[in-house]
Image (cartoon, rainbow over all chains, first blue to last red):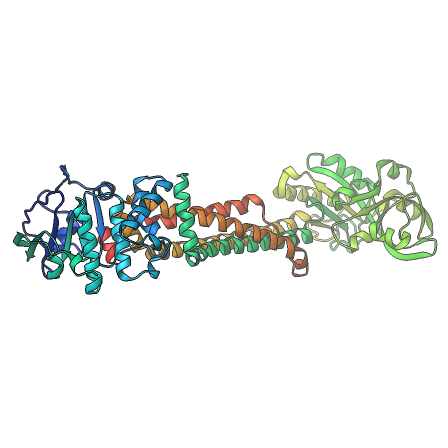
Length: 222
Length: 409
């Protein structure tokens, strides 16, 4: 980290409506991950404001940030970030644990979301026993388990082959169709085309923000 | 703190991270185990030492008479000085402030017979107070008393080994033995922690001994005890005054180093006490060192554990774990493991100490033990420091931003 400051984002002004599926694109160093980290409260902004669900997100200490993350946000990472000694269902029920949901309720909820991503049969398997696509689907189930306002996906398909990528995007589209707001950071054109809106970043500013005709991933998945 | 969910979460973590759990648990258990063993051995060494040196009363002064080396008041040098009964009375009368008790001691070798058994033993003509000076423990019957001294009775108190040699399984009390051709009645059997030699003595009233020796009133040796409350320095004053008094009475030149000799057990005691203190210091030092080594061990393990979990903690934080819950989780887990394994180490240590304790007597370690409070204290200290050692890296880990933790591959 260091103390020398580096202006990565130089004035980003955009709004996301409920139910949107936004792709944030840009080459590496464009600031797309930083933007996502700020949206995800994993990082703090120096200037400006960030409002989420009519709540102004500011003066975050770690405890507050943790609570907001738990309440508002679901994360999907390129490297899945499942806890390797916990089974799929335990991973999915973890955010519910931090919400203070009872054990029995957690189990039910977690199984419901695992069923949604089609992995109910794999509930008691460890991440090491799952394929990359399966791991990402578990991660998505985990992100959705806390019923977040926004699902933030950082290169969700970055570690997957094309076919698996489309399967994951298919899942993301389905979740979006149920009314969930999703932001996907990607540098792959085909993945971006599967979203409803594409925001392109370059050197810390938005150079393009357009609605696109969504390509359905389901068409590629058989 | 005591929610069931939290416990389940911790048990799960422990169950699924067996190596990590084993490592930290093992360190704690080993630390406590070694602490207990070393501390116990140290105590054993001290016990043995006490037995060697501290079996007699430690506030006694022995007086012996010898030959003078200087002429004085018309007496030639090289004159033999002798104590007699009047000296006992005079000392008693003149030093009530210092004196606890006084007894003569007249040692004579004698052949002692009972039926067909006989052997040579040392008899000691003594007063009743001698029992305290030697810390003689009466097993059966009684010791010499004032009436025996007054009436010059032919009573004998015999050592445990004398009774064993002469009487075997037979009860010695009330039996008559032949001591140097006079018949004595056995009135008591004693034991002494000073070892076998001390249990081969036969005590008789000193007046009886004097009677047998042509009814004289001579005394070889005077054993007296000063009041413990006057302390070592007080005893030195007592000794000086006593020396002046006796030299005057016996007409010995004040500057004559010979004639009367003193042996102050307090001097020996002081040296022994110093040695015992040094031993105590070593024991404490070893214990402390082990404890510190244990604490360092746990600290290392805890740092390693937290480091290993950095990514997991980052994930947990991204999923909504507050810094507080992260710290609590790590502490809860580490304290749980250290407590369990600390007590395991404690019990194994005490068990091992108990079971090998007896066989170490040959190596000058007697009854190695550790008192429960010390053992518990050490365990609690280790648990406490295990907690502190876990807290510092846990706090740091809880403060890292999740993205940093997640980048940590």
